[in-house]
Length: 599
Ligand SMILES: Nc1ncnc2c1ncn2[C@@H]1O[C@H](COP(=O)(O)OP(=O)(O)OP(=O)(O)O)[C@@H](O)[C@H]1O
Image (spheres, rainbow, N blue to C red):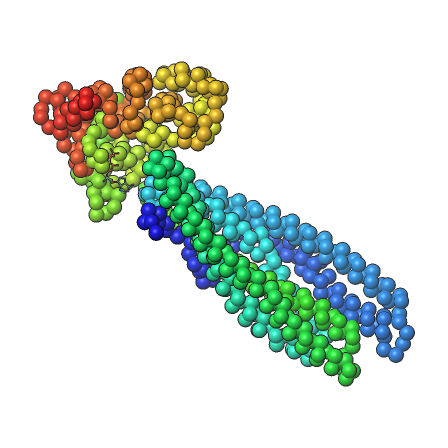
């Protein structure tokens, strides 16, 4: 099999029942405890009582009204009992309807809260968290894992309480009307429980295997669609289809197995309950013949025992559901417990309006502890200056920028903005004054206008247009089918690299930050667009402190200061003319670029 596609399983095979986690889940139901209480009371008083009373009334009808011992039948009593039963049936129907509707509503509310809390928490997590996980696995937790708890919350909590009470109620009634027969029937309960739990465990495992296979298919699908251009460019479709077929067949096989096991469950439970009914009939008939019991009692018994297996099977079901939910809950709480890697101090104060001076003092940093990405960096940038960061790939340019925005914290040394350590101020106040333009400009689905407005949500249409004009994006926008109201797809695939870059400039200009961080797009663009971007850039940079991860000579040349990095260390610093005067890293970089461009 190809080594190309390897997917880690995000799915964990069955977790043992964990009370602590269960208690934590239940805290999400707490805000709705009054509603839950109402539902339980309605179901207990109206639903359960009617359920338990009907067979009892039937017994009375048979024994006292239809075949009373030694006298004629009593029609008035029969009619009265029938009317009472009718009322009880209607009450039960209403109570059931009410319960189902309300439990569904409560369940939805709980799921809503849980998903909102998870999403809110994920938004607060640092880059380091996302470095470790593929987007797909984060997505699965907010969708699938939360969904898998849905069943438990909608039916689980209330039904379990009701089922337990129903079981206790029926046992008491059975013991009350005929203790000997009751004990004979109850003997089959452990057998039923054993069959139910062992088989269920097998079924559960089989479905988990199906889910693992499906989640691998999803991961592969995701990768295949995202990478379709590369696949087609390298003519790898056949290989890809073959791999997918293999996964698909294995998924079907596991599904067939799980489904076969599932189908075994119903009949097996029926056979076990039939054994109970058989004992009931044989022993019951014997008791009737020896006149120790009436027909009415046997009838009531059969009905009660029928509703005895129901909650047992449902509770078994619920238990399975809970075990599955446990692994989802564990994964959700694992995220919830994740603390931001760049924590905000309790006494952090909002940073006042920035001047824009940025200082890196002896900064050392590594994404992984054993591989430093920056070593002892010292850099002092006056407010309003532009700094171009240059160097080979992997030399640490983006890392400097990441630390200034405090996406990560330094391991040693400090980052100071206007003399304040970035760790002492609130993250929100810091980042809202730093504009960031990334190389891979992210365009959200929505209109062009909305995408620019992302820089400052309260901006007026006129301000948006002014920003677009200033960065020379207006012309191409008005050429689009609906101008500023043109809908763009997520990631803006329909726009060119240059157009996306101009849009992101407009977004940044609108936000009007004192400090601007810009990762220049490396994609080659035509000379005209290059010129346009350069003009846009000079407008954008005016009066701001800026850090540009620079790839274009034109950008580098105009920077106030050029910082040349190599393996996480600063090699040279100065402006273009100064650096070109001496033989060094910068000069050889520039000469290499010229050679490449003129080749
Ligand atoms: N998220 C990350 N997790 C682990 N290591 C990382 C991460 N990002 C970067 N690195 C490593 O840190 C080092 C510096 O990376 P950085 O992105 O700062 O380089 P760069 O100079 O910006 O490169 P490029 O020009 O290719 O963008 C590299 O060795 C890189 O492999």
